[in-house]
Length: 454
Image (cartoon, rainbow, N blue to C red; front, side, top):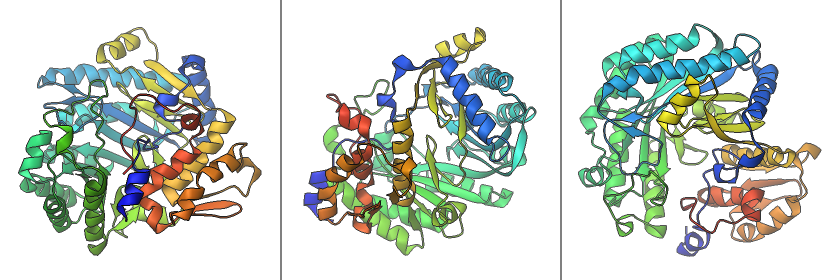
């Protein structure tokens, strides 16, 4: 990849876990009544056939990782666990009262924060409380994110007994210099231990999360981390670009300077070298920032065209209805988005009043739904088409005109009724999606909103 292409296309842009992206939600025309109506519509259309997904946000962490942009609450006081579990079950009960019949659960994902901040006993209470009023779909997938330094064998065994078969461990980088900069400390021994425990207990998919572009990170650090990771042979892994967004409110990205963070060609070189090392280790690139062994169901979903992307990232399962439980969680009915209160106290207060703890959202327009399908196709399959009338929209010719230069640069191929991202264009997938992002094009931000695309 030439430096000129990086310089041309390395601009701020969304990661497209949704469309419209959160900064472009129309909060003014949204209310909780509309949200409930969209949930019921989605539930009626999909519950019996595909079920629903649950994302449960567990926000507590014992220490602040300074690369993290997630919503979290830093504390070492574990007495916060029980009230939060009770609140999650109270929120779930509100949805149970809304649903016209017993829900079928196809997917549960525990994210954070640090889910393994919670004791195995409290996690069991949470999952038991959710499942006692629901049926589990035959092809269900339960997964959780584990911190290598706080995940115990009891965590793994308890969740396995509850039906969890996939676990993702946050590794980031093994370099002591990088770990000190991001305040994220776990040894290779810690990661190996929890990985071996998961295999021994019976987990069928173990994932590791790695990050490139971290402060003080060098080429040798990335390659050493990947080689160590390969020795443990996780079934899939995420190789994320560090999103440097220090302007975001509540962000913990401090303890290093902008000059300490690799940029442009230096940062992209870390990814390209890491990617080649992963390919040499038999991993296959899937979508954006993700790799999997051919034996993993994420790869199989990719090859069959069934890969999906939502607020949890890439998934081998696809449900129309995604319910987010917990502080700051985002729900998706396909027809609308809703985000819960970001502040823990406000979240508790709404639930105490018997109200859904939603503070903002967006109802998708007809145009939004069409554009969303195209962006999902590009992010999950590197191609999209408009052969059917339902896939066309008024601004499509304008979108294609704006992509002419990317075609001239050999990054994409535009046909009369389709667009394909070529191999050389995969690093610029966010840029291609931005051309379809009509809300972004109509209202360009004047202040920083997104991380850089490369």
